[in-house]
Image (cartoon, rainbow, N blue to C red; front, side, top):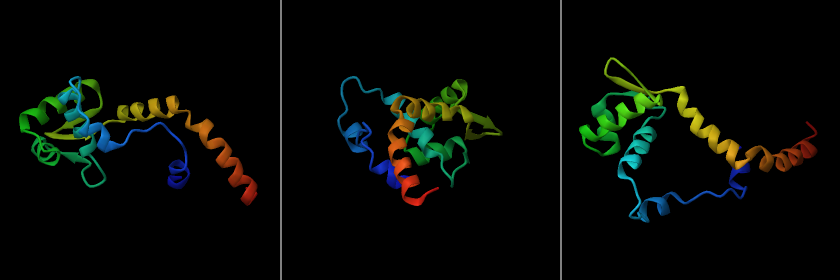
Length: 119
């Protein structure tokens, strides 16, 4: 699937361009919140506030504000001083999937694969 998606012409921005081209309209708090979400991975399924702050490179106070906001919005859960991602986060990916019309873009490639392999 990775190969197929890499050959598609989706309107994606380069990660570096997003960060290096900060404008006057850039919202640091939003950027920190997104970095907090990105800190969770297969090796960090749940983390303490201090672990999140250290991993993201922000102060504990900034991590706390981001985490508690994300908890209130339903994207992050909290149990016994440990934070973890909640299923609501999948809604963000679903929004991209729907708006990018990936199914329409993939259909010709999937048909080609079916024709090639007959399955």
